[in-house]
Image 1 (cartoon, rainbow, N blue to C red):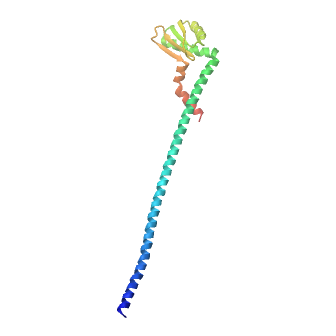
Image 2: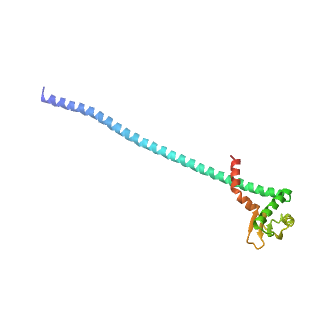
Length: 188
């Protein structure tokens, strides 16, 4: 064999080796590029999933807050309607025996607290006649004055040092938490 043939064989063997390595290198590079692209898109998908999850949580939170706000507004509206219906009911029974007994018990309780028969009574213009009759029947002396209230009475000592507020407004205000609790239980 000649030198020339040896060189050709060596070069052919080198080319064969290069060809084999080239295929492996190309295959390796393609795999690396494919892995990089896959990792990139996997990360993108993961980020999008996180964003979707966060957006879903934000939407759910907003919906919950809005629902609770509407519920609170509805309860406030129901409470307002309930209080107004109480005032309407008082207007309906005004002058009845039951309402007269109610006013009488308020005046008796207030005069017992004040510990005097000489008092000033403030009442709604609608109740003035009834309150004057109650005061006479109880032997109270003093004045019965009109005041812009929905019902009930305010009883004060003659000198004004003691004032007992038994207006419907103050009675309802004092019972507001109880009314709210009742309203909440009734709507469950």
